Image 1 (spheres, rainbow, N blue to C red):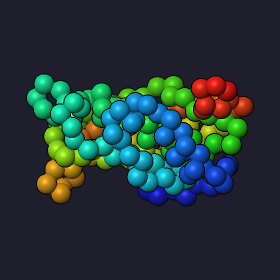
Image 2 (cartoon, rainbow, N blue to C red):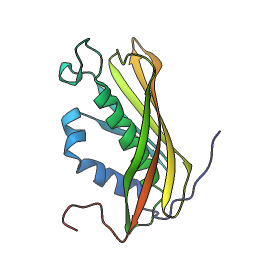
Image 3 (spheres, helix red, strand yellow):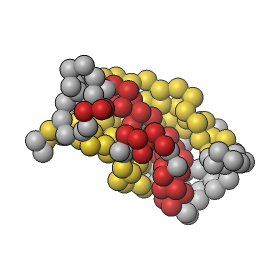
Image 4 (cartoon, rainbow, N blue to C red):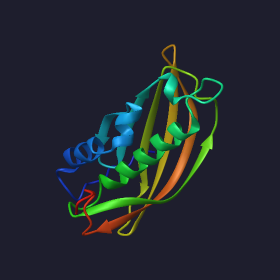
Length: 153
């Protein structure tokens, strides 16, 4: 199911890129913002041993972080220029070991709202050129009108 959304802020993509660049944790993970559209965001991260759990797979914390960020930015893409977003809750189902060279997370808005937005996210692990679904998430995000996403505001 593909839904077309109209962003409230025509500068949404640049705003998301600036916000993403300020996230120290995303930089620490080596995450890349690879796709930004109204209601849809994709983030990827390449494998590094520092991102693994005891079996050598990507750690579930990395998988969950990508899902949370993708959903958050998908919702953020539809908000007015003076609003920011926070995750209220999210559920993550780990479906398969995240064993591979890269994680690709895609977040999509399911239902936008004035106060709350519902998003879904799928995280795939790419190994030897083949993508496999390793996690699925659903989340609720809250709009914060009049609140900048910059720390000093």
